[in-house]
Length: 123
Image 1: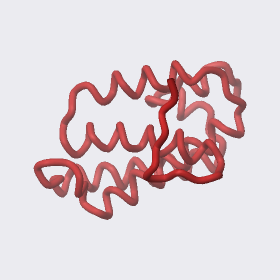
Image 2 (image 1 turned 45 degrees about the vertical axis):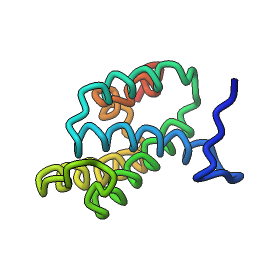
Image 3 (image 1 turned 90 degrees about the vertical axis):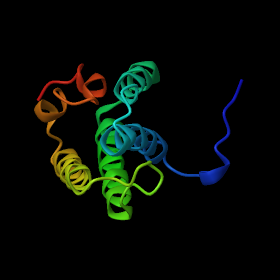
């Protein structure tokens, strides 16, 4: 079985796809309070398997970008409309993931939903 995502079908870096998936799941938790988003995110990250450090940091940056973009839109796909505090949280988290990902901050990510990507690394 294969899943084809026609919305974003393109040739590109897989960090973009994985980051978007992670950002999308986290967004649903922040904007809609969906209780199953975090377990789904953990399962997705764990099931993705081993990746190298460079890809892990690129994924974190792309997930952060996704959160900022979606927060800027105000969680348009999440009923009801996202609260101002949820939008602020998403923006702050997105910025943090981008900054920490660009800084290659292994320690920070070991306490995030992305920890599985960074658990085998050492600072």
